[in-house]
Image 1: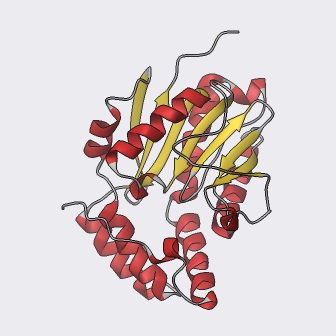
Image 2: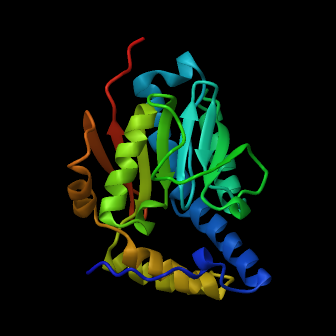
Length: 245
């Protein structure tokens, strides 16, 4: 199944206020019940355990649809921020809190209008993070990579590794014919016409696991791990050698 870049309506602010609101409800439902929030929470927990972040700082980083997240030693995380992101962050915080890890998010987006004030925020570009080298614990993104072209994914990963002390985490969709069929089948559940368009469009422009591995092989990480998650989700951890002080 060939990758096809189909513009997503929600990204272009297309639709009435009611259609947008209903589409955001759809996204919250999809990510709550069909693996999005759990995949990112599991990836972050993996980094926290292996690097003992819970013991050292009780902080982690998290990011939701459409831009990256970052976490620093004061417990800040950068992610994008509309109500969907806020809801997903809330789910991740609860999941990680049950495991003894505190998550204190900060939002990041290129557009100030996408930042809703629910969390501290930064208006900047995911491909040029406004943070010093090794200044943050984790840089990551959820449902953002499929919006990027291959060279942009590699650039984001490299920029994330510059900023991160421990790892870059990527959670995204897997392009697959059965996944596309499920996206169309979901029309019965969707409230908004925007979701009926954007769901299949997201699958069409997503990457396969093999493609993602090929894109990232040029990135200078100490190790790269790729995992499959429930309902055609992939999780990537690009590890960085521990920073000694």
